[in-house]
Length: 79
Length: 326
Image (tube, rainbow over all chains, first blue to last red; front, top):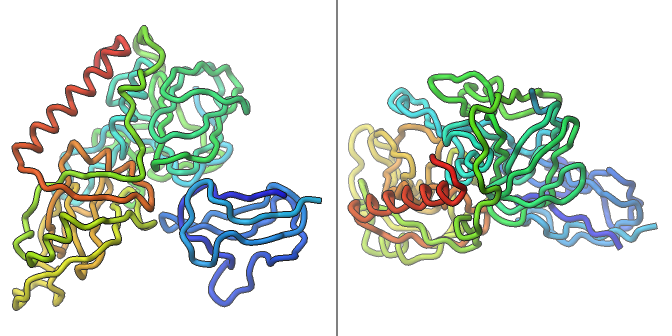
């Protein structure tokens, strides 16, 4: 299992904008460097990218929740 | 010599002790948010207290030095890496030409500082190298760093201090709970007793809406006294006729979420300032990450002045511990 953590605090979003489809969903095949969500802080959006390849197992944070640095965001089953 | 920026991080800017003397014409002081950490970084690399450093917010940069450099990383706890190898903070580090500096995930607080012997050598604007991004002045082209930037570094002007690590006892803490001292006024008389009680006895939490301009807190809210709003003031009881703001002053728009103004704040406006954070605690406020639980403690102006003196003495002792003079 690979856990993708947030490197910064802020508000987590799964979508690039309102009304748009999520970057990724549970069960999707994920590649290294793929964007899985964004974290908003100081009016800036930072993309959260996967550093492993595999299948997206689960989101550990809900849309619009606050995250802190080091908080797990996504679990990826590697392979 | 210069640092080449490979990845700029979230909001990396050049800062020094600030640009004072122009707040009356709307130019805020800017400067390192955590002055203590920035200044002691300079101490570790043989600089003067007012030399410019790089302020890194949450996500630091990846940079490569084009010549030998003596650096120190101070401020918020973070993993420091030179060519991928972990290095300590609050300690002098020697880089060779071509070495890459990068950072891991921040472990607490908000900002860490890269001090380099010789200082960051951008031109002074109105007497300071500090970046004021909203006004587009100071720093490197008036903005935060971008990939590909070459950040000029000055030449060393003195000897390195005899001690290469700041003792633990002189390093600030980056806790998730803070007690921040404030002086009430000018408009605390506009709060009801219950409102004042909430301000001073409530628990307030830093929201993610926090940057160099100010920090917004969530909590129990406050109540204002009813009044007929004077001519020129907005309709909400938290509004006043426009007035100058003090650095560190606390407004509570609508009575819900207090905002502490910090070093890039606007210099005036139409919100009642119920209190002002004492100058000795402004670095502490700057270290507050989102989620930090905060209580506000009222002190007198005399106590604030004593605290300022104590803070200056503490800083002098920290410089002495390095075998250096501020």
